[in-house]
Every structure is written in C-alpha cells, then in structure tokens.
Length: 595
Ligand code: ADP
Ligand code: MG
View: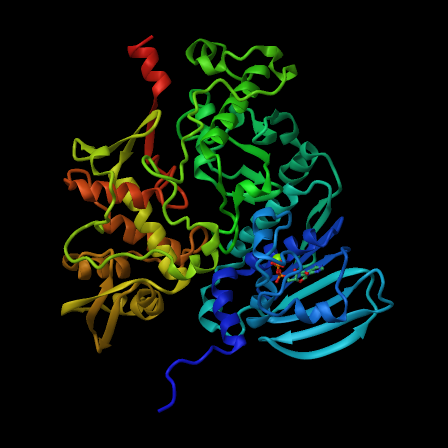
C-alpha cells in the first residue's frame, strides 16, 4: 500500500501561503513597497491599473538583485534579511519571512527587472503561477521594477471576492499612506489608471503629513516628543478641535513600521479624554523607536501587530507625553488642568533630563505572565513562531452553551453586573465591559477570520435540520454558498430544501436555521461601497449570535468572554463602532475615596 502522506508540491504550498499573505491588491502593494524600502531606495513609484486588479507595479532605485538573487527571491523562505533564528529578535527591515514574492508569484503573472550597481545589464524574469516562463537580460537603470498582473488569475473564487474598484483602491491608498508616512525621507509617487494620485517629495514629517492629507493639516498638528530609556517617541497629534467622526488618521509606527495596537491606541484616547466630543476620534501620527529585541513583530503574517515587552510602561509614557503636548500647546481647556494630576507636569519639562512619567507602574508586572494577564492570549513564545498560524484559534466543541468553557485559573477575579456588564479588576484599574459588545467583537473577528482564511470550525449536528428557501433566499444562497461553507456550515441543497448537517462552532444548535435565515435575508450583495461582503456577513452573524443584555453568565463563561475578548485584534469598539469598555483608574478612585 502506498503511503497516505505526501509533501505538497512547492507551487501548492505557495498558493496556500498566499491565502494568508495576499488578500487583495493592497496586500501586494504593501509587500512590494516594503521590499523597495528595505532595498534602500530613496525614490519609489507605485503604479496600478483598475485599483490593482489589472496591474500593481513598484519601481525603486534601491540596491537591485543579481542574476542569482532574482531567482532566489521568488523561492519560498528565501530572504536576505535574516540568516539565523536569533536575527528575528533584532529586525531592522520590514520583510523577513521571505514568502511574499513566492506567494505573489503563485497567484499572478509577475515580471521583474532588476539591476545592481556592479552589473552591466539588468536581469528580467517572468513568472506565471510559480512557473518561470522567461529569464533574459534587459536594459533598465539600477534598482528594481516588479509588475504584478492578473492577480488571482488561477483562483477564481478569490478574484470574484474582490470588491469594486473604489473599495480596492481605498485599500491600496491606505497601505500607501502607511509606508509613505513612515518614510518622509523617501520620495514617492502613485498613479492609478495613468493619473497621478500622490507626488510626495522628500520632506519633514509635518510636511509629509500635509502633502498626504491636505495642506490645511499643517496647522492642525501638535508635536509630541519624549525620550526615555525604553522608548523614543515623536510625531504629532491632531488638535482636539479637529477631531473627526471617523477613525481615519490614527497611525502608530514602531521602528518605522506601521502597527495596530488597541492597547496603545487606548493610551492616546485616554489622554484626550474630556477634550473631544463623544463620537469623535482623535487623530495622531506617533512614531516609537524601541530596541528591536524588545518587540515581537512576528505574531501576524501581515505584520501589523506587535508585542511589546513593557507594554504597561509604554502605555504610561505615551499617555503622559500626549497629555503633556496637549497642555504645553494650550489646546486643552484650562479647566482640565485642575482635573487630572498627570497634567501637572511643569512647562520646563521638555528641557529636563528625560524621566519616566509620574505614573504608577509596577515594573515587576509582566503583562504576558500570570494574573491579570489580558494580553498574553494566543501570543506564543518567539521560539514557536512558525507554528503560530497553523494553530490559530482552537475552540473546544460545544453544544448548547453560548461560550466555550476554558480552563482559566482566575475565576474569582471577574463578576457580572446587572446581567449586562463584566467587571474585571486589574493591577491598577477596574475594567467595566459591555458583555454584548465584547461578544459581538469576538464573534465578528472569528467569523471574519473563518471567511478570509476559509477555515471556519464546524460542529456536526446530531440531527440534521432542514429549511425551505424562498426564491430570494435561494438566489442569495447560491451566491453565498462558498462563504457559508467557509463559515463552518455543512449544507446540501435539494431543490428548494436546504439540509444542514453541520454548523459553525460558535452557533448554538438551537439557532442554526435562524442564523442561516438572517444571513440569507440580510445580505445585500449589491452594496459593496463601504463594507465588503465578508465584513457584512461577519457583522450580521455577530449581531445574531452575541449574548444579550439580560443573559446571565456562569463564572467560567465570564472568564472565557474576557479571555477571548482580549485575544481580539481590536478591543476598543464593537463591530458596530460602539465603545466596549471603560476603565476606572486607581488614581481616580484614590482621589475620590482616599484623597
Ligand atoms: P522578505 O522581504 O521577507 O525577505 P520577499 O519575498 O518579500 O521576502 O523578498 C525576498 C527577497 O527578495 C528579499 O529578502 C530581498 O533580498 C529580495 N528583494 C525583494 N524585493 C526587492 C527589491 N525591490 N530590491 C532588492 N531586492 C529585493
Ligand atoms: Mg518582503
């Protein structure tokens, strides 16, 4: 008998990897732009057609590649940026996985021209779906040009999943912003369908922000600057009166790499507290320089998330620095000075030897260990980084319970209030969480993840359920069939009868048909102007299945909710943009009860 297990051929492995790294044209733009930056270019062009669906090309004047490197660049795990595992802890470049180009080449037609300083000629390589179709010599200037055409040509499901040009272009612009704002020392141009969208000369950061978002921005910015042994912080915050209703202009960069961090975001918003109207969001462009050894960028394949060693201290520093800037530049109403002792920083502060801000921080507190460990979940130690994404979120099978029951040893630390809030004492804060919104956030991310990665976890139903579809539902079902299966539903259509033999693990058995009904009823597939279909579906399901106000939760359910919640990528707002939690500071309490 022949062996059951075989190794996947490289082009198949690359296609699978591409599913993680390349979701849409914007992901290609991001990878190519970052490679150009890593190559030391000081001038980078981004050229796209039809929002990247037809062409995404990046031309740089960086170090280029020789005839060997151009071939190696498209091999999986081929990178010039790390050599040994230890290098992972000392990253100065944006890339390091060595899988972007291999992934892109597996799902598109890629034409590369590249020339190093020492080569007389440039080299050209054409690859289609991982297959090299041509390697020749060409006559291009020093640097690299990579053109990606016909993205997802061999994965029709992915291609069909792309949104309108407006939506896809928006995503490409977002990625472009992130790279352009991280590197004002590089000249960037960006063309879509032959017309110029951006022409950004080498500039100061303030000017770069203004050229990207519009000249009026220059006067809306207030500088932030701080230096401690832990972090160098600089950048700008937007004056509170210019706060926006959308969360558009919120940027954190760590060592010149754009990152998302709900935790640090909270540090900034809390500094703005009381200065902007409810429903408005502060704008900020904050640049952190930290020792590369103290961060782990490797926790997500698209690398927008980072783990910091001293998150609590960073939080305090950012909050205090932002408050300081708001105070120094007198953009805060004077009244506020009386209200918060952390604002009482002397104006000469800026010239003093840098110190940690006067905020109580327990330096022995390690947010990744032990009690009160909110942020440690799903962050594996760096040694296991390769397995991180194969393991993902593993949920225990459940039947009628709403929440998976996890074995978490902090049961006594949380409690439920008014069948509505979960109260969770932390080291120096009290956290009050809206249970519905938190659960919506958890479910939303889980479903979105299931759809994008096509691996929703399914539970078999003991007794298959059936439902009869209306003509409209039938139409929708045909369109959403793939997504429905990706979510974890196991379905079989016989005429108008839908037989359901399996359902997503987060969907209680009693709610299976209702949930499908909601899904088929509410999805308006024509409206992709704002939200993608996946986003809509994940939202609809999150809303339908989230625990409600009035639902009494067992102790373990509360704990599991908290744990799952803090494993979320975003923790500040629900999928419907509602605030999920508030905190009560020990300092505030002390003032009221102990002052
Ligand atoms: P990574 O960036 O993680 O190393 P990539 O697949 O993005 O992986 O790129 C593989 C390698 O190809 C890079 O390490 C680099 O050596 C080379 N490379 C890619 N793009 C460029 C470029 N624009 N200029 C020079 N070298 C490049
Ligand atoms: Mg790269």
